[in-house]
Amino acid sequence: MGAAAHLKSDWALWAAILVPPMAWAGDLTISYALVRWSCNHHTTTPVQMVTVATLVVIVAAGIAGWTADRERGPRTEVERAKFMATLGALTTVLFIVVTIAMAIPKWALHNVCV
Image (cartoon, rainbow, N blue to C red; front, side, top):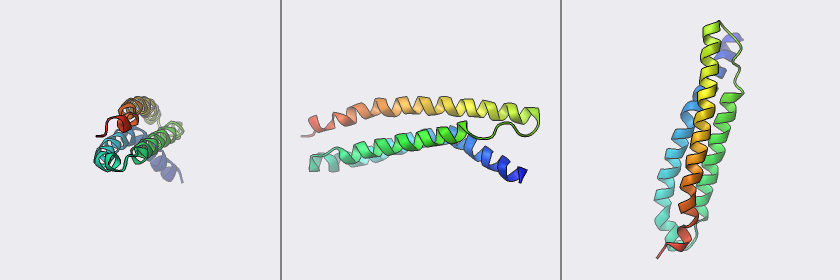
């Protein structure tokens, strides 16, 4: 039972570090692919929904990493888990800010489409 909890904790810690940049990259790619369709249909709703979904995924990964069990195992493992949780929280905050900053031009897209 301890090994299963340890694996789940490691998964959550790694998710908090790796999911935010991957979600942001996915948001950038999918939004870019939707621009032509959005301009042709005179709506930016799909592009904005992609951004909202990305923010939800980033926050969920950050919460999973921050709430992961960090108090089991030898001292070095506990320190590693605390470091990873802190790194995951910082990564989450960074990519929330980057995603919101990149959403501003998307919200202005309806004024730019010709």
